[in-house]
Length: 260
Image 1 (cartoon, rainbow, N blue to C red):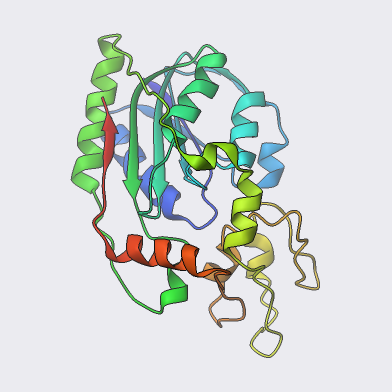
Image 2: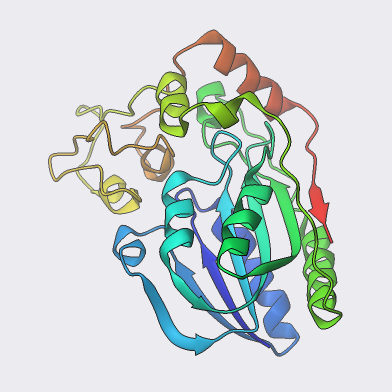
């Protein structure tokens, strides 16, 4: 089969899972292409090359229990020659929310049907707030089995049904939730060595050459914090409720969510 993996991964967690998926597919002699929609210059393009794909694999982190707005808009506008999809989301162990169901709806509106979906717990982007080191379980075996089951569903023409569940965040602006959760990760000039890695890591081109962040562009993904080797940017959670929820999720049980 000819497969296309389209992913959004500011911090690299989702990309790591995509690499595992690609290894599984290539070991089974499937042809695989990748599109890194993390970069803005990729997202401004409306068309993917005129190639017919047997399966589209979309992968993204969960933001406020949903598909990141910027990636959702990208999925809505691009033209893809494919009718079958597999959906992968990664989430920081708080909740997978309605992201899988939302992505399935977006694809269905484009005539693309879902044959498997999975939400994988990963490191939370804001874990640096708590100054702890926790090695997350990889779920590699589970992910391999999921991909094989989803591919089998495609061969057997068996789609999966994903229904949205009621969550308060459905009625709240995604950017607003991010803004009230995390302070803008401004640069600490005393620690900064001007390597500019934060500029290149930003999926929104929100950091200018003077290392200042445009507030209304920043999606609080924390990519600039994670990429900095000198601690010149940091995550600061604004309120005690958000801090308690994130802390509990980091230390709590992780739940793998699978639809096959």
